[in-house]
Image (cartoon, rainbow, N blue to C red):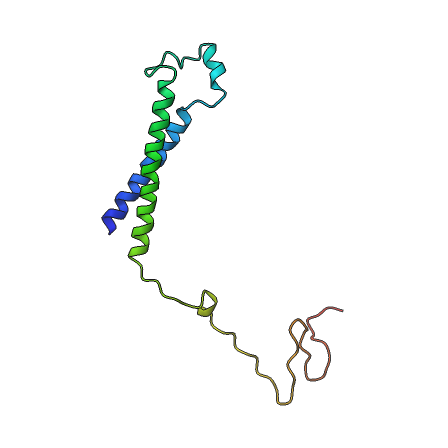
Length: 127
């Protein structure tokens, strides 16, 4: 599976670079007015409409190969892995140790500082 995954990654990167280049080569919807003033689209290799048709078809083809490579990578990534059902991330965390309490002492509620045996406030809280 390592060879197939490497091949798919290389194919996907090449398709991504090609897609960027093809999209940047295409004219936007506002380019028709620029062509009337001689932007050079009518004198291209494919003609005024031929270049747009060729670029859009090429972009669609490369995009299809890109998505197929993405699906292939997802399939090869999931097929080689055994998925175990667990309780989630928190089930792997160790439980915190409970502080040792003295006999007959009631633990302080959450959010309140614990009092020492004399009933005074802890020394680290400024007055």
